Length: 227
Image 1: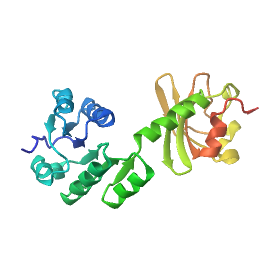
Image 2: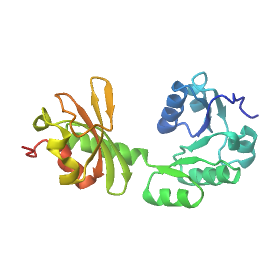
Image 3: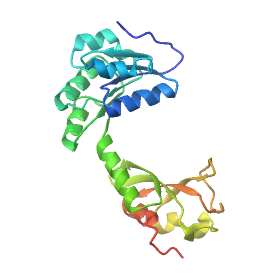
Image 4: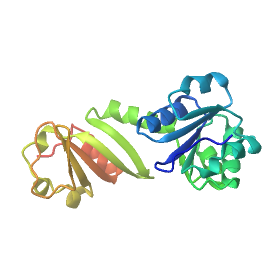
């Protein structure tokens, strides 16, 4: 029973409809993509029926069931199963069935290493990442968003400090002094991508910056003296 698909848009399979999986499935659907949502629990499937393209009750650790759903034909499969053994087996099956892009949810570093070894294209840590975001927002009140790019490096969206108002990026010289690269300025709902050195910062601006965690911490800390 393969899902009916249109060739005009990307299709995604989301396997495991807990909090994370349901959120991914709903957001992809809202963005206009075709989504197959799969879970072993009927109640989880029913909650997304009518929201996504198709919601199916099936066991992701059953290779025959996954083959019948045709998941190899999707642009990507998100393995969002919380159970350690089931998530690993589901990832193995997806890989063996020919899924080219597998995004798998991990609950620990060891879990993530195993998922990488058995075929996951990318491993995500939603609980850990959310904990990091909450912690940084508690410590640095000006942080809007935070994303780890690689160990030791992050991209941060933070409201500018009072000391930055009225200064240009050339005057602040953040890249030369601290290795911080400003990739965008968000202002009143508009985005200035790759701002120039003479762009003037205004009150209420938000900077999107990339750099090492230790220097971004310095940027985020409103107690630092930037005068």
